[in-house]
Amino acid sequence: MAPTASVPAVSGPPGLSRRPRPRRIIAVGGGKGGIGKSMVSANLGVALAQAGLNVLLVDADLGGANLHTCLGVGQPSATLSDFLRKNKAQLDEVIIPTGVPRLSLIAGAQDALDAANLKYAQKQKLLKTLMGASADYLILDLGAGTSFNTIDFFILADHGVLVVLPEPTSVENAYRFAKAAFFRRLQQVESQYGIEDIVESALTTREGSLRTLHDVLAQARRKDPASAERLERELASFRIRLVVNQARTDADLNVGAAVASAWKKFFGIEMDDLGAIRYDDEAWRSVRKRRPVLIERPDSPASTAIQRIAARLLALDGTTDPSSP
Ligand SMILES: Nc1ncnc2c1ncn2[C@@H]1O[C@H](COP(=O)(O)OP(=O)(O)OP(=O)(O)O)[C@@H](O)[C@H]1O
Ligand SMILES: [Mg+2]
Image 1 (cartoon, rainbow, N blue to C red):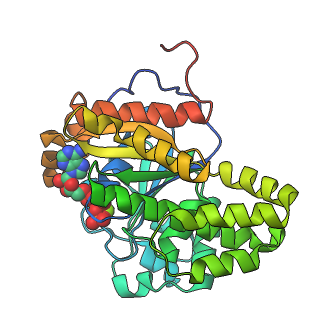
Image 2 (image 1 turned 180 degrees about the vertical axis):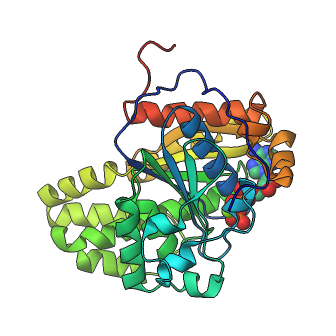
Image 3 (image 1 turned 30 degrees about the horizontal axis):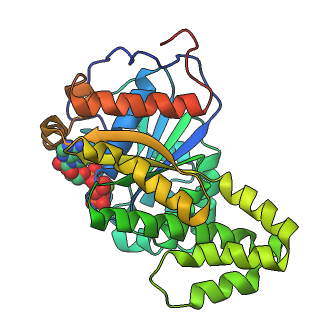
């Protein structure tokens, strides 16, 4: 279905390369609802598309799909439900244009119940198909929370972007989300490292503190130092990228760095602070207008912050134009 409003092509943000790149997956998650995951996903998609890359946005919020609305796409003609239910057997059949050049969308499943209860085999099929989709960047907009469906999409990504608000409750949720992601990762590799018993006992321990992941690593070290070292290297290669959204004060801008440093102190694992997006009236106004803020108000503080974040992600992939400042 055509977008409800046509979106003019806007020249790409400075500093982003226009060379085509090998495909990468970005997943945007967060422990809490309503913190800006869809706003960040949609606008990162616009920023990367404006940089000359082919981007496929996927609404993977299995319980509350609404990414199409952020992009001004009306009731989608085909959605993830059609693919999951095999009404449309090929992923291509559910990809719809957004009106932004090079940016297309797979709208979220509309029947929330079906999708939220995605069976393991369906999820594997979806993950595998998405990984084979042809685009330079795949961006997965995830639902709130730490369900296995959400976390499995997150840990599959090359860039797991964790959105956090500069508020204690959101920060707490972000740690919980990061911890859930690392434990899920641990479960996937536990047999390789012979730590099934350690992970199992950590998961069954009812403990609210963050210490459990640390304990797993410490116990693994005691059991087999060489294997634990490999495990730590493996975990270290999975770096969560933080985005602080709705920053209102200058101190808020440093929350990402503080969260990353506390995480490192506890677990010895790095997180990347991709930067902060200020609370910006233009951001919520654009959502109401069903237009990405990057198209509607490209010079607004939210837009420039998102462009900077997109440039950082490209730099991590070695995509920055070396001639740019
Ligand atoms: N930087 C910002 N400045 C001002 N308002 C913002 C900003 N980011 C997001 N918002 C507002 O927050 C609302 C929620 O954003 P969004 O829908 O992207 O959250 P979400 O995390 O995807 O929510 P859900 O968990 O329900 O999917 C938006 O409609 C917008 O009004
Ligand atoms: Mg959302």
